[in-house]
Length: 168
Image 1 (cartoon, rainbow, N blue to C red):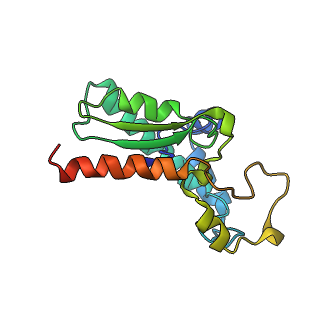
Image 2 (cartoon, rainbow, N blue to C red):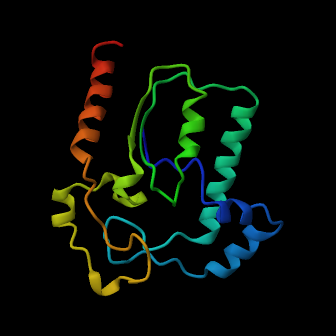
């Protein structure tokens, strides 16, 4: 199951990861890692070194795919077309390499649903105790919003999982 699956990063992040020595520099510059932010369900930022490690994993997956390897298990993928943190083309390319039946729940770009909001429903939003005093107002997607298609996504996930119970 992939929810906003990180199989591609922004063009800037991907380009930056190709610079020799950048991981070492990122590790040095990261300093102490901040784990407390306005949203108790999400890290306030991602360490640069962690981003470089993630890009290594993504590159490894792409290499396997380019070698012709396939994924032989069904995938459930939910992703927003408006996600700029992990662009949708990464999971689209992965799905093309699968041989099993998949469920791909795509949220249209017109909803402007941010990366971290994919798994947020109204109940979670109401109970998360989001601390607006810690928000960087200029940051896009800083304040969480409920996924308007959360119920439909959950229904599709239940149907996907029910296929396993039925022996499909």
